[in-house]
Image (cartoon, rainbow, N blue to C red; front, side, top):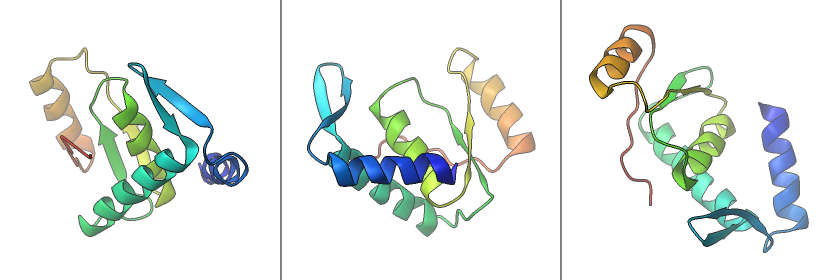
Length: 108
């Protein structure tokens, strides 16, 4: 995953104001994604998440998913994507048995 983040950092360096993602008509630049992912990774660290920890992403495909993914890999933690189609109780019960669960409702 370090490879992904080093490539992302390079893209930020080369094209900071270029559009990286368009979500629901709103454009996010590489710089904005980097800044948001830095804030998210900082929040994870304050919660005690460290390299090698597993962090579940239990949110639909959205800009928050992208930000969370980048923030998680930035600190060296492992992204565990969960399908939102699974019932919430069933999915969360399963996750609690196997992983640390960090649920962040809103990161903005």
